Image (cartoon, rainbow, N blue to C red; front, side, top):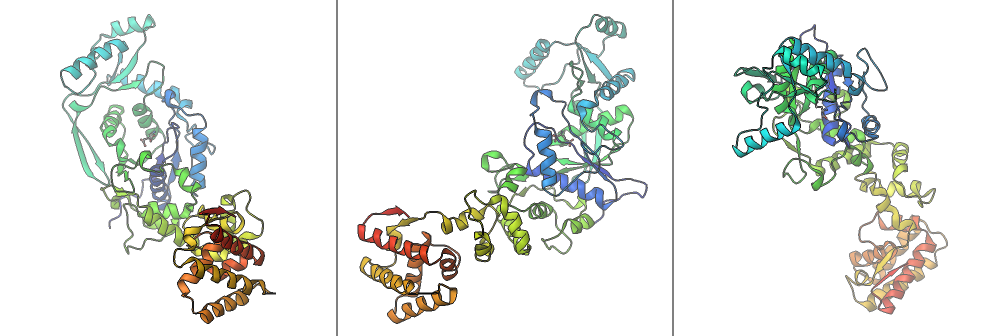
Length: 493
Ligand code: GLU
C-alpha cells in the first residue's frame, strides 16, 4: 500500500457538503468518515458545509437532523455550522454575494455570459434535440451577444442567468486518487448555468467557489458526482485556481448484491441503523472495511487505528456490497466488548415502556450472547413479563398427548413442592425426574421450554425458569395442561 503523496507544505483540508434535501444516507456517513480520517491523519481540518441553494428541495429540519446524526455516529467537524471557523458562514444561502461576485468576475474575464433565453425557448430547443436524438445541450443562443445588447437588456430589467463559456474541443483532465487520470473533451460539457435567475448559484458554481474559498485540498465524494467534475475543472480553470485532489468513492450495492443500495431494498438512512441498535462504533468499523483493508487484513479496528492507516488511494474502485451479515458480526463483536454497565446503559432507549424495573439486571447475563443488535432486547425478553401465546401443536410436536400430559403433571408436582426455587434446586429436580422416567431429554426439555416461554429458542431453560419465578412457571405449566385438555389450538396466557 502506498501513501497518498502530500507535500510538507500542504495543509490537508477536507469537507463534507450535505444538501438538506432529506435524510442522511449511510453512504454519506461512510464518505464523511473518510474525509474526517484523512484530515486527522495529516493534522488538518475537516469542514462541514451546508449546500442549501436548491430552494425547491429544502426539507425543514434536515440541517439539524444531519448535524445530529453525524454526532450520534461519534464524529464531528472542525469548522462548520454551530462551530464557526475562519471561513464562516458555512451555509451557502448565507454566502450569496460571493457567488454573484464570482459569476460576474467570470463574465468580466469573458469566461461566462449572460443568457436571456426564456424557459419556453429552452424547452423548444430541448424538444428539437430529443427529436433529432442528440444529447440535450444549450444551443449557445446568447453566447455571442454584444456587450451593448447585454447592457441594454440588463437595463430594462430582463430576467437572466449566467452561463459558463465552455471552450471548444479542449481536453479536460483531472486525477482521481482511486481511478487515476480522467480525461473528457470539453465538447461534451454543456454551457452550464452558474447563476440562476433568482440570484442563487447552481451547485456547480457554489461548490467550486466554496471549496476554493475554504482552501479544501482534497475532495472525497460519492462517485455519482464524477460526471460533474469536468464542469468543476473547467470552472477552476476559468477562475485560474489550483485544482484540489479528487477521489470519487464507489457507491454501496444492496445487501443482496444487486444494484446500487436503495430504499426499495431496505433501510438506507444513517439514522435507521442507529435506531435498529447497531452501535455507532461498530457501524464506523463496518464502513472502514467496506472497500478498504488494512495491511494485515484484520477487520476490527478503532477509529484511531483507521486514522493512522487509512489512505484514499487504497480504496477499491469497485462497488462493494453492504453486507448485513458482516455488519451483524461486527456489531456482535462490539457488543460483547461492552462492560455490563455500559451495555445496560446503551440498552435503556430500546426497552419497551412496560419493561419491569429490575428485570434487566436479571436477564442481561442470559441474553447478552444472543443480542445481535440492541433493538433485539425487546423481543428476546418479552416472554419474561408479557403474556405468551401457547400453541397446542408445538407442545405436541415431539410426543403424544397422553405422554405430554403426564410429563406436565409430574413436573408440576415436583416444582410445586420446592420451597426454594433456585437454579440448583430447579435443575437438580427436573434432571432427576427426566432420568428417573427415562424421558427423551430433547423432547422433555423442549416441551418445558415451549410451555413456559411459548418459544422454541430462548436463553438456557433453568436460568430462564428461575428469572420467571415459581409462580409464573407453575401458572404457565398449568395453562399448557389446560389447552392440551381442551383441544383448543392456541391460547394467550
Ligand atoms: N451537496 C452535494 C451533496 O448533496 C455535495 C456534493 C459534493 O461533495 O461535491 O452531496
